[in-house]
Amino acid sequence: MSSPIATLSLKQRDAALSSQSRQLEVLDAVELSHTPKKGSFDATLTTHGWESLTPAPLEIFQINVGKLCNMTCHHCHVDAGPDRKEIMDRDTVDACLRALDQTEAHTVDLTGGAPELNPHFRYLVDQCVLRGKHVIDRCNLTVLLLPRMEDLPTWFAERGVEVVCSLPHYRQRNTDAQRGIGTFDQSITALKRLNVAGYGMGDPNRQLTLVSNPVGAFLSANQGKLEQEWKTGLLKHQGITFDRLITINNMPISRYLEWLEQSGNLQGYMELLVNAFNPAAIAGLMCRNTLSISWDGRLFDCDFNQMLDLELQQPGGQRPHIRDFSPALLTQRQIVTARHCFGCTAGSGSSCGGAIA
Ligand code: SF4
Ligand code: SF4
Image 1 (tube, rainbow, N blue to C red):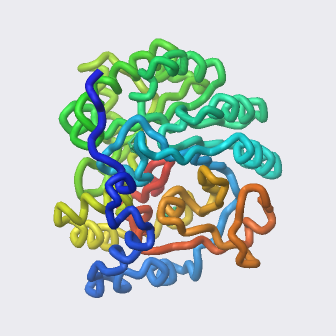
Image 2 (cartoon, helix red, strand yellow):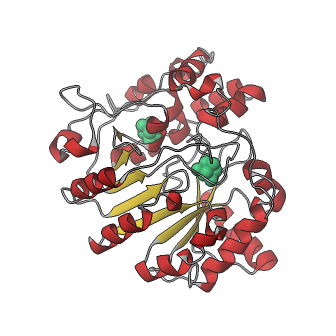
Image 3 (cartoon, rainbow, N blue to C red):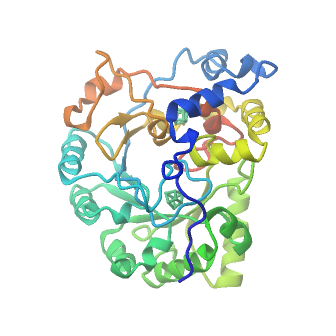
């Protein structure tokens, strides 16, 4: 198997942007005084009648079970990779389950890194399925080819797990450019295995969702149109079927931020995000109905805030941890925002569930 490694993590390279505060400084330093509300996300929200971003009822528990990944994609907002050893332990997994039991959340969304590499992954999935939750596995596809993972498509199918797979493009060149040489071929092999296990055929208990994010400094194209194009392209060239495609804008953080800086695209991309602000996306922002939990049990409004170390702010001011989870306090929080948030409101809007508006 050729190596899918595309780069090294910021942390492994000891890059300046491995510091989250440095990332926030870089974003704040972008000259946006000529854009609406001078590039202030909060001021932009206020203009559209949102004095602050407030939570809606909690629907989704998004658990980031660790930064360990078998890949090192250029655009990764987690700075994940084989060198990242941060992994959720069993005590924290159990604390997540106890917290889940206190809520009406209908979905548990498992992410990483490659979540399947966490040794407690199968236990966590089983516990969530036992509780009647819809479970999503955010899968990079190549992980399914690792020897101890080969049974996973069938194992997922038996439990009704939705598999949400990253595939930047249905053409080899674009996918390998973002995720590393050889990734496309491995992804196609994994998708075929998922099809064999019954995924991607319209069965609601075997949902196969593909995720596309732009390979470059532009916004996602129209989700519906892209889905049609991909369905035709993957069936014709690879004989693969899937249920739906979601599009996600690249967030200007972590390794994608590094690429924006190094390629001279940072200024233009931030202007693009700010100028493409879509007020229709505000109500559906994922931070409003999701709780994001980090590998070490800390709480965040969303996975992007988690990667910037912007912890959830509850009344009382203490650093919230899943051990001390309180549904009542959670509803009283104000969502923490900064300039990266323009990535979620640009164009059709963007979230882990795809386009918003
Ligand atoms: S983008 Fe996904 S597959 Fe790629 S390094 Fe990050 S977590 Fe791993
Ligand atoms: S990054 Fe997006 S989801 Fe997260 S707090 Fe900002 S607007 Fe909400």
